[in-house]
Image (cartoon, rainbow, N blue to C red; front, side, top):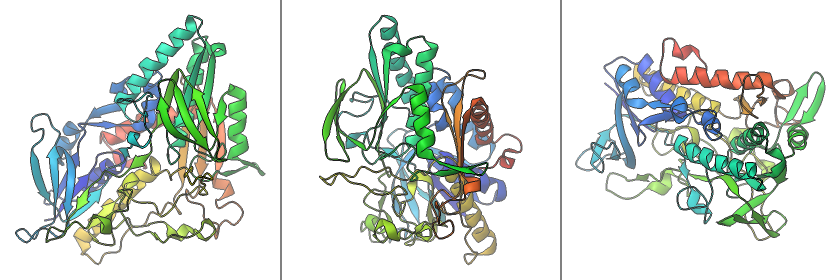
Length: 486
């Protein structure tokens, strides 16, 4: 009998758990540990943040799903990994602290044969003084609860405009190393749409505040789109949307500190500025969950398993080298820990070998470059891939080959809503292959031109809404859920 413990119940962890349970007999244990009691379809939080969906439409309780699928669930926060066990107990185990209200603060240990770290990001609001909804001066859409607060603050600004008071609304990145530029782009244009629907657009200055050196970077170094024999770039494509909607962009920006109504920031050229605001939704940078790792003698070996960012080392190449020497082959394929082969990290929990966008710093040495996005489709694919590896090793033995899913050989689609409504909404739909550019295979742009496209229109919004429905259905493990691709 094998026991698989999964830390985290986001897209990666939840996907892995469902596939493991579907393909393994009941003689094997599948265990999920998550500090949250609910699953959240995060891409739809932007609609909660403008009042077009409720929190209940983007979340559901995990416990009933896991009970039905015979998955053991612990609402708890993992704190320590003991991959070698201890001198008293040779079995590998994880230490957890319960967040379940009925057992809050209680500690426990969970033994495992295989461990999947799918803890996702720690929202590092503390990286920028004054950032965030808890004690800071900005809002967020990183969780459904944050999005509800953002909606209330946005409606306050809209009401102020209805009373004739001009407002500046700033949406974007709260630090020079943030990722998820696509989510900020999406929220900015949903807000702009809401302002027009409310009839107050002429009283609003909408500002997109980003660490991207140019529009259309999205943390993937930009894209070249192939369309009907012609080529265009995501930069030109995105700039046209900004011009059409009258959204102003502040590029190459790092928020140094945020005071009530003012962002103090540095730009790539080394200049320092202030930007006044009435409403600000700024995303935080991410860190790993902060797990500690101990060997059999109780010695902390965390630095052998994790990078200083607290993201887990896997089978990628982490040697420091200049941008010109980066290769698609640097990126991990199996997500196995080189220190402990029965431990895996997927989604945001794994450490990328380097950025995808060209690294940039200000003259003062401030890093102002998007971190690599690792959410959505790639996260789901990683979760399933690692699950299949573990299934094969349980059934065929430890020598069974690992399944592969490098982001350098993986495509992705992003549908960024630009205003909701089945008749009046629209969305920017982008596809790219591969996610990580491969200049050896595709010397011209690093990606396949026929598989890298960008379109905007009403149909994209319908697709976005269909994806919301489909992935909620899939995550609830409804009949034939596994036929819906990751």
